Length: 195
Length: 159
Image 1 (cartoon, rainbow over the protein chains, first blue to last red):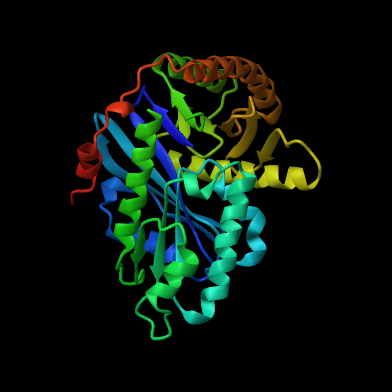
Image 2 (spheres, one colour):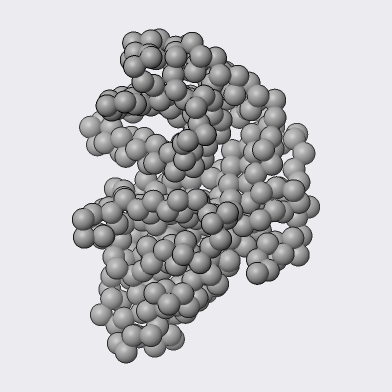
């Protein structure tokens, strides 16, 4: 749910990175954090286990600049990818303005991708959202790995609705900002429609 | 979009005033009003040393998790939480099912006093929020966003 503050002239939006365990959601946020000017970002918070697996969420507040005198702030969240954290994932989707699905390109993770995407759709529905009506982009991460599936196959299975998609190597930053910009643009465009 | 919280100057001034009064009357270190989705709305007191953005997000996460526990236990919600620290204590309450009132206090105050003052502030805050929601839904307020162009959006992303 975007929060428009006419008093402080700010627009706040929430973007959630979703995807199966170990697909690189946290890595996306870490890269964004490392490459963003200090004045444009807040502290990155990771609620993680001792083995650095996301336990509840990662959170990164970002300022993108001004539109018509309004500061635009994006709150980026990741969900915990592991299957058994489903209750937490549902909570994090509350009030979402835009979704990034991070798919793991490795062939052996195809099942996990499909399960996570189904889970995203179901959990959004439970909150009264329709994935097909939300600002939504897909990122295919780990494109550099030798066991990655061909793009045609990934697109067919994980992007049947043909939303904008990006190939990525999040550890090296490839595709990370393209993905963020795409979803942020969609969120702002949606805000204009609602205007 | 009903999925949107809009804050206007008049209501923000009223909410800030409620925060100020609560902070003063309860001898609190700081008072924050936070949207349930983790956006900071208003604050009062010693907030210069606080990372308000992180605090807001984590508090909302905490409230959401507690709400999840409540529904598992067939409770509607746990309206209040209290965390006791060595120096700073935290009182969290949900107001009008929509916002979170966070009070940070130390030995200058007490849980009883904070609870008492929060109850009064919550009534006032609920009233302001009701007005705000009506105003927001009436659609009579001017919106600058309808006039945003593709260029405006593109310009944000020019590195």
